[in-house]
Length: 333
Image (cartoon, rainbow, N blue to C red; front, top):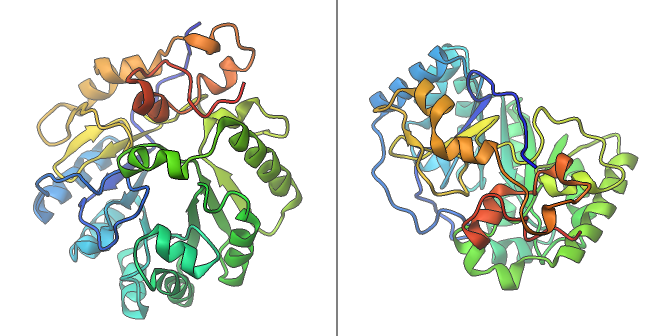
């Protein structure tokens, strides 16, 4: 059984890592060991021009820590002036009141702050940075005061999967309207620390069942997931643009040197945005075509949920097995 998805003329979103540098050293980080040359501001603006020409509507800056680069504001302002919608995910450490005003002036549509536990000490330990919880929650307040829409992101792991309700309450206390509960990806340090931090398939099943119930009962917060493996559960009523993983179909990842990968968690280079023809990469890349035409393998063969989840998270399957089409190791079926 092969998956079938209608291919867009370009991705809806580019997740853009300007730098792998970071002031944190998180236990689950996919990129902390990565080092590549970084593009100049002039080259970064050339990338924006390409994205505008290809009518890519959304850019999300991540990292590394995007605010490590002081020219982020110039770049974001340039992209905004070109008509792109710009957002960012940050650990919050560098987002004081002055930085929040610069974020506003640069035209950011939203900023997400990563907070992995409502317990300050646990968050600080997970992020390997004392004081990071206080700086992150202060960043939410600075952004709210500047009139910036904020979101909150948490990577679900063994430290927080039973206390995610407390994270939702923390969001309410800081005027956050959307919370992303991200799945654990098993890439980079996440792969190295997966036995300590990752959940068992049955624990993932129980977490998602409970989280979906909470989502259905919650009307003051938007609770979002990014894990295709939950499509097999009752109560999951999302109608995604594509089934299975969205990487390589709705989104791509851009590394600091201009290399394109399917997503940040799959370290395979499709091509370089400044050196290669983008349309050719997007439409004809053997790597992307392979991801878009996964074949059911192993326990996915004959599974009634496959047409909805398409084997689950491609990045996780690749990290564990080296094969895009193998079943997601988080799958409980």
